[in-house]
Image (cartoon, rainbow, N blue to C red; front, side, top):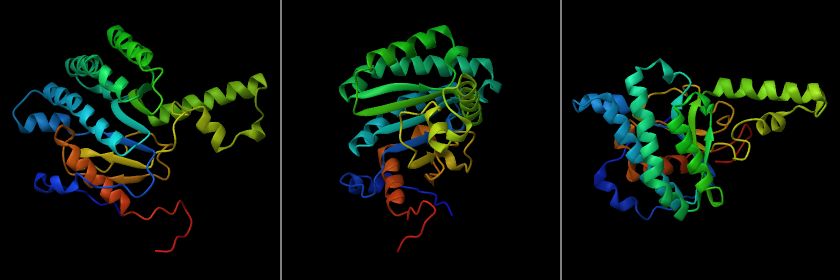
Length: 255
């Protein structure tokens, strides 16, 4: 059973000194509810995406406070191309602004930028901005910010299967040697640990084709708040919820 985590800003000060007790190496976010946030305020949908991009750095820095090694953000899915072109254009524009505005902070915090997904379909300007961010943070080693762009979990696994088939065809590996680790090594996230905690904002209870392989034993938390309103206190509340879970990984554990 999944618990919806909610927090009031009234108790945010009490959470400032919270200490994470369970190991948490990789946290993933489905940044949902941007359009609904804007609609509720009588604003165009694209301003919800603008606010969403502005929210990212606070969440990233909160994750760094808890020494979380890897942070994955679902920024644009393979299915999001179905949205109006104007909204898509704004979304990429705001992502470009985010990278240019926050790159110095990411470097200061020793955060390496990586991208999961097929970026070849993105606007050339966005591709150039992404490439620059990757190059600028290439020497950063303490944390990883994994931005998932034009990403789909099923597509990622299909891509991995094709790559493995080519390796078999070339004789690099044998069919009998294919195991879970071989598959993991062919994913975009091959350099990252499995996801420990996945948070989807806005109260929706779906994975939406996000990191399907990587979340096999992740804990899920679904806070009933739209991403533009998801702040440090909300995240800490979700971390507290994670700390209260009993992670068995398919085995038994005394409780």
